Length: 303
Ligand code: BDR
Ligand code: CA
Image 1: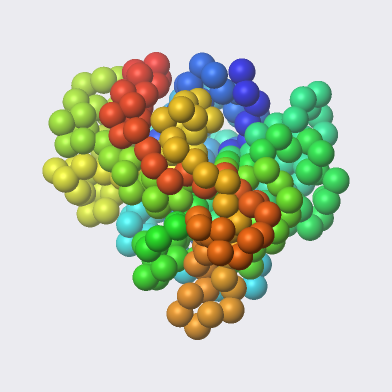
Image 2: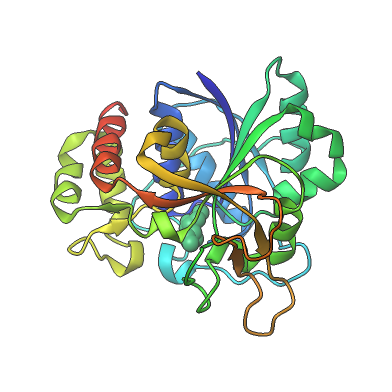
């Protein structure tokens, strides 16, 4: 099983990615870390703990950065609801995060492991940037970094920028310049990663997890269940388990941090115009049917 650490801002599509990280038999989830993004970090941490409680799992949760490196947080409560996971009445619990910040928890988890670990980041890249700055030697223990973020084309937050990168462009730039082996699952593939209305309608009958997700989905993007839902974050997990579903290309990717209208844009040099060494494997196309079949398979394994 591939050992992974998942950095997340749950977040409704994050919740689905967490489910897949827990129940895909090929993966071994070691640590969950939270970051401010879709909502505040207090809320994303609360949501992560709530999910662990829902699934009766004891994966440690460490709370991460409350704000982007230099900018103010602009959240996405308009998409995920006030709490970040609006729509399901989770039961109360006493669970607490670890008493250390996410970047430190990640570092210690890396050190403790005998093998290199895959990092998966499905929120803004603040914690990963902090990790790289505070503990530069961490790179030796990171097998690769798989991110949901960016776009080779248009954005979903500004005309050109995808949300996770747009929220903390400085962090993203640091990460893309780090020399880590990066797999970028951006909007080019995640916009294709639709769950069909037909499948969504069956979810509440599937199991308790399906019921919970169905309730969350009814709020997600003001309830666009009838048109299908995009599972952005789930693509990063899908790539780990079924890379053959993706067409990827090694590319040089730069993150714009200064442009008045373009900050947070990932400039993906598909045609090699800059003649620079590729720094990421960029996913550009998805086998949608294969993806949907895998999602159905993995969610059926959940309780
Ligand atoms: C990304 O933005 C967030 O709202 C989602 O959880 C996902 O990580 C998609 O652009
Ligand atoms: Ca997310």
